[in-house]
Length: 424
Ligand code: PGA
Ligand code: ZN
Image: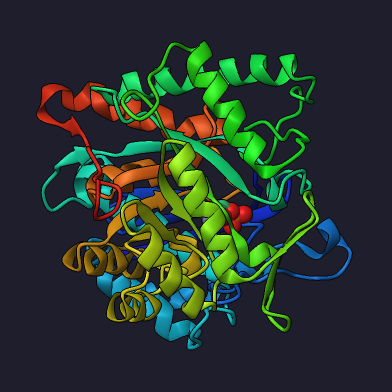
């Protein structure tokens, strides 16, 4: 049973406050967790509690910390920590709101994850084993190389150009392949006279390029320079994060860097053209969070690749169910802090798999050194994991954790081979 909760105001990788929490059981097992925070957040996400006022420009989380130690602790006190469902239901009931905003989704998730860690400790298991109902695969990594949008001062309109090392035999080989691409990309950017020394929020490059498409050309050049075969060794994924440049009242999508204004169907055709010219296996948030009509068009035109809903689904069982019913997208990005508790995030993974939707577990742009997400990717068999780049410690903490688990499990576990959409 849970006997004590202590919490503290920590910092995330953007230097903003976030919630850290420790749960202690009567038997003396301890679990600790620090939660992340997004920048390009969807409007349907669970709501963090921020203090406002002058401290940290209003981003302080002292009230959320107090709620973790106060009302949330009172709600879970005495509950068996190994019953994650009971812990999470109690947290939800104590808050009482749909979006977690009264006590803070940041406080709720911190307690939820710290409880899971305490449960694992009480059973003498690593977190991935404690949450697992049968290990199947290590996640295929999806790794950021070039950033734009909200993560790189809008140097490009598209938020994320990533790579997937589809030809790697092991997780360790996957990481090494991508580290090679990252280094080669730096050389390509330098040769093209683009800025390459600056690091974006997720550890990728944040170059000023002449067009969004040029980022794909840079990646192609980098593959060649690194001696990797496009499509066989390495593939491309993009996170359009279209909510960020959608103007709903006019029904248009606007790319500032190219001075282009598009309807949803025109944006989709641009993405179709990219997918023909480049080895793209996954497109995230191709359309804005509430553009269900545009999303249906995208799904009809691009179903052969992975169509990943992030702002669209916000890790919500209800929104994912609607997407499945309407035949929208074919994969879901899973970010536990979009919904609030581990149980709900896990439910989304299960709903997705039952419907044949792929799952990509994802970090946020504001992260910390904590690496519980890596354990969840293995334990929940998500098949894919998206963390950011191969540098900056808040990113490498998670990659390093999967590398450690791969060594620990040895030949007992293989790297996942996602199918990326219905057609490939
Ligand atoms: P965020 O971005 O954490 O800033 O929301 C990540 C993403 O859009 O996938
Ligand atoms: Zn996204």
